[in-house]
Length: 384
Ligand SMILES: *Cc1c(COP(=O)(O)O)cnc(C)c1O
Image 1 (cartoon, rainbow, N blue to C red):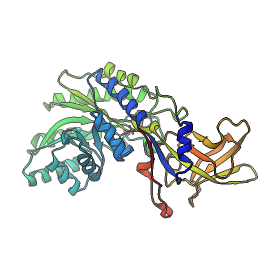
Image 2 (cartoon, protein in one colour):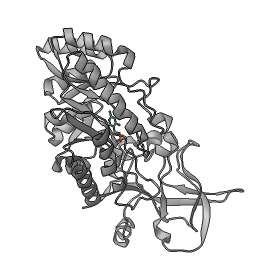
Image 3 (cartoon, rainbow, N blue to C red):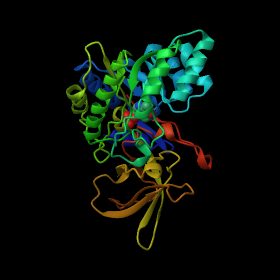
C-alpha cells in the first residue's frame, strides 16, 4: 500500500525510481518460510528476480539460500554472506570460468543442464583435483500454461536434460570420478498461477526419482524450482500468493523418502509485490482514438510489458479519489513501439507532472533494467 506519507516523500524525488517496501518483503518472506517449514521444505531465493543488497539482506536474515544463474550472481551471493552450502547454480550456458569458480567455492550444487556440460564439469573438477556436488536439471516436458517466453519445462525449450537422454547421463555419472550426484532439479517456468502444472510436475519428479533409484544412484534432494505466480491485478493483497496451497500440492503428490529433502527456488512470488516503479507524467498527448499518457519511465526501467506483454496495475498517485476518468495508452519515452505499459487503461483525468505508480514491479523490474538510449534509473526509495 502506498501511503499519503510515501507520496509526500516522492514529491521531492527525481523520477523514475523504484520504491521498495522492505517491511512488506519481510512479511512475505516470513509467510513463505512458515508455509515451507510446515513440511520441512528448504527455500532458496532466485536472485535473478531482484539482486539489490537490501532485498538480498532480507532473504539472508530470514535464513533462505539462493539460486544463481550466473557466476556474477554466485559471487554476489557469497559477498553478501550467504553460506556456500546454500547456493545453487543453474543455467544452460555456464562458462568454464564460472564452473571453476563454483567448484572452488564448494557451493551446494552445480545444476547441470546437459550431458555436454557434465563432461566439462568432470574435466574441470579433475583439473582442480576435486569431487564436486552436482544436481541434474531434468526437462520434465510439462506445459506451464504461461507466456511462451517464460515457459521452460517443455521438450522444445533449451533448458534441462530431456527424458531420452537420462540413460546416457546416468551411465556418464556412474563412471565419472569427480562428480557427486546429490540432487534432481526442475523448473518449469514462471508466473504460474494455476497449480495444475505443478501437479503434473510432481508426477514427473516421482518417475525420475524411480529411474535414478533403479539405476542405483541415491538422490539426497529434489529441487522443484520456482515459478509460483502472483496476482498483478491486486497489488495490495497481502495474502497473495497462497504459499500454503502451493506447498500442499507437493506434500500431497511427491513420493519422497524421509531422508530426501525438498528445495524450492522462488523468485517472483517473494519479491513482486514489494516494489513499485514511480514515474511522472511528462505529457498527455491527444490522439484521434486514444490519448497517450507519456511517462518518464519506460521499458528501460521495466521491460516486462514489452517483453512478455505483461500488464501491471497502474495508479495515478496525484489524483487519488478523483471521480472523472479517461482512457489512456500509458507509454514510455523510449524509441520502440513496444514501450507501452498498457492500452486504453482507465485512469483519473491526468495532467503533466502527476506521480504514477506502476505496481508489483519488484520482480524482474530493476534486475532487468537497461541503459538503452543511455537512460538510467534514479536512486531507489525505501520504506523499512
Ligand atoms: C528464474 C528461475 C527461478 C525463479 O522463477 P520465479 O518464477 O521467479 O519463481 C527458479 N529457478 C530457476 C532455475 C530459474 O531460472
